[in-house]
Length: 80
Image (cartoon, rainbow, N blue to C red; front, side, top):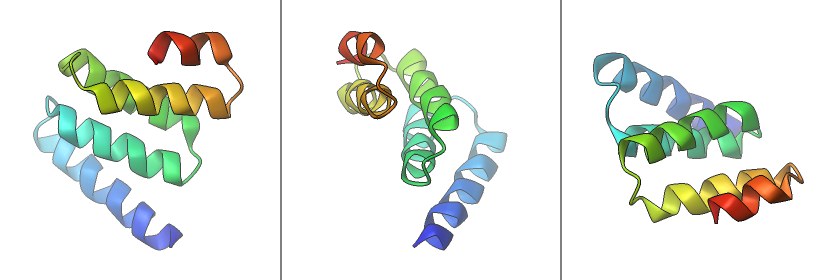
């Protein structure tokens, strides 16, 4: 299963090298990183998705979930 997530990461990174302003692409990349337990990268790209589209509720919730996983509860609450 890791292979699929790693393949997804490569694809989304390639897409972002062409268009770095896609909140959906940042969100999907963050989700792949989250599945790979690469939380620092997941946080970075969830935050990019939010910066590009602050109304993306899923990005806020997923970012909060990563912070919860990392036991950073203040940041999780702020994201939720």
